Length: 420
Image (cartoon, rainbow, N blue to C red; front, side):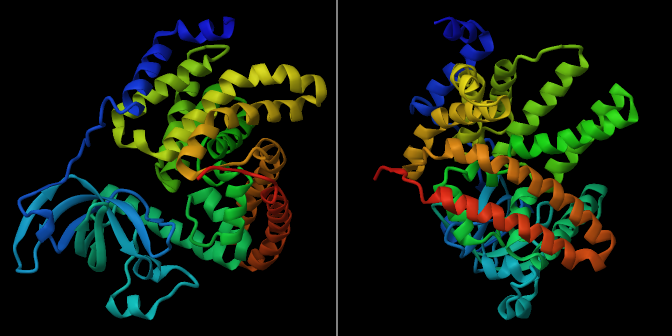
């Protein structure tokens, strides 16, 4: 009871509880902040031009990539045109998106003209509207704005392409590292990806707080070496901004970014101990305001649910674990248990499965992933500066990947709870 009242008496917590009831009980339907508007009705639209706002993500079927498009103009088969505005989901055929990707060169795409698909580019698509969005059959042209922001966006696109080329050279290990650093899963081995899901480790592949905290830790390390506390804060902020700029703002990564920035601000103001539950609740409310479309996103729910479980239940479960295990293992088990308690209902509702083994699997695999990312970053930098080291670096990163892969496969064969 004491724990319950400890949180319930906070106004920000009460505000979140009210929002949860309103949003997820069906009492209120979240309106679109940027509804699609055009003088041409959707059933007559055969072409659309707009700016891509998010890096394309491969669909489960593998046939399309999906991306958020800010509409500029629509057209019909008769040549009629209309200015338009609002945001829609556009489905782009995989053979078109992957035309520049190493190992995925399609003659069909090359014949029509290959384009680099990334956030910030302006594209013209042919296709038709469906109930889920605009399904493209072809891309007619691509351009990048001749402005400072346009050049920055194009530079980001080229950097992401170069990283993909390097990761492709590292095989399956490069595919996993690419997913962990960029959120791009084009080269992630399907067997490994399914094993992560069945082992209750899907959160590791989703860009979130774990990845952001690792970059923050690197910034703290270099900041302390400089010996100035203010410089440490500046380096942390720059590192976080650069990472989310490069990886892209997914709902879970946006949550992690807001929480991280709030924590830094609290530390800069002299707060010795941050109130994590208040920071999480404020982040929830702030994200709902700036990006209401995230509310019904599964990644958004899992991200907030996992962190809420860690904060609220880790202390309770910690009393048991700290008596049975060494402190590092006990801390990891208690955090994993708390996250699993809150995310299990969401996983069962949307995926129909729940993996209890995820509590233990997270404790074992997370340290391996941490080492994998840090060493991968170091080897990646070395390979980009000295290309001669690309193959030796690939050998070492694949050794680590082999350990991770077979460890995850072992956990994935454990019993799961399946509800149809």
